[in-house]
Length: 120
Length: 466
Image (tube, rainbow over all chains, first blue to last red; front, side):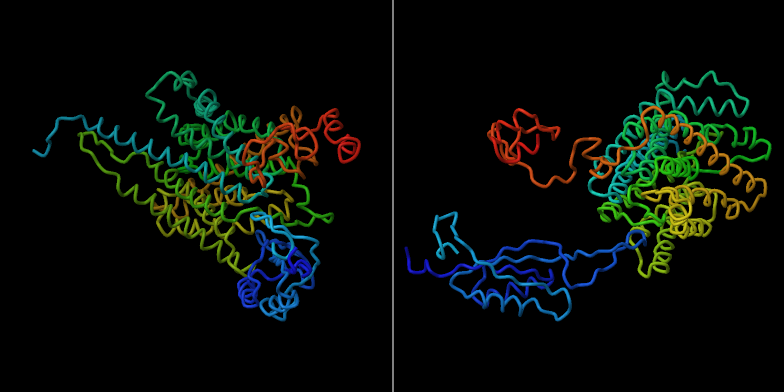
């Protein structure tokens, strides 16, 4: 076991505006945590519902298109990653999104079979 | 002498004219993918396969039925309503010289049939639709053609046309093809009933957005392209032979139908764009696409008969009316016409054809104007009555509508067992004894009792599924 085995592994999971993805990627790279997974998602939070239109007939869109970011870190403090995402994604308007930090029980790298923080 | 080759000018003219007719026939056939895209885009993803099946059925069954029955009904109705002889009605089947003309007629018939599918999308039983297509192509549409182009009731030799001393003007079928399809679609949409969720408990309409504006607009452009065959190609004579054997190129007539077709579609699109911007605040792509088609429909009967500015006005009127006509259909008549076929094909066809004498190149003639209005009324009335009777009969035999469960699940799965946009598919052959969902893999989505118990053991989902 390497000494880094005790370093906690954290997953930072964030929901951001799709048009802020570029800024967030850049901020993460600057913070030293460039690896991430991105998913298109829909969700509802503090952002008010908006109106859609089909043939002039309105309908309510209360699930907004967002981008979900998953960023697993061990060497870099999760707080730095949260701060980077916050810097990159903030506009000040409702709908900027949320950031969550979760503990990760274990990690394995599929290519090498490395375990723990080395795999991250 | 300018004659270099000794040829019969009639043969030259016939050859060129017939090849021209075949080329435009193929162009009109290309309207079918246009309709398929236009309608697919306006429905939800779960019903796209059903819309595509209906469009293919219109063509494949339509051509078979129109060859054996429909084309003969045209001749029979034409003769019966003008005092003629019906003996030769089925003559085209054995006469190879009649087949180019038959095919040219057939592509118009299939255009009328395919319009209906846009109105009844997302809830009509496929068997019922197949039966209606057969009746549409065998009887409903051919009777309209018999009344008009077939030399019957409304033509100058028919009982009504003869009485008024004029022949009904509908050059390429604004009413004969499009209004017939649009009105049949309205009747069918009414009788099938609105889609689940289209109206709330107070009867107010609720939007059901289609899944792809892109497909709808691309379909519109393809339709407009094919429409050049529809309108310009109906000017089937491009070389005319005079009695003294001289050949004349019909450039002026061709130019008028080509120009009026173009101005009509553009004016229709422009007016729909302006109308949607006025009433909805922003110019709407789907309304603009509908306006292009309504403009085309409005001038389809008029192209050789009206001035260029008259054609632009007629097309613009068709495009202007499409939005209010759709809201009238949905909000007043409470008919869930999914693709707005009554507004686009029905209303624009009726108005554009009735007003031809107002903009006529040769000046206004009252008897012609009366005949146009009577003709539109006769065609609409026949289509309403015949469609209603046909649909009532089909309803009694197979039922018009799918079950509520199937409508919720989508007609692609329910009627055809397919997914047009599948999410995850296997990329290689797997060991078929291990089913990834814990049960036996079956193409019908079901689960056999014995296997479910065997593969899941005493615990897990197998017991629940049983």
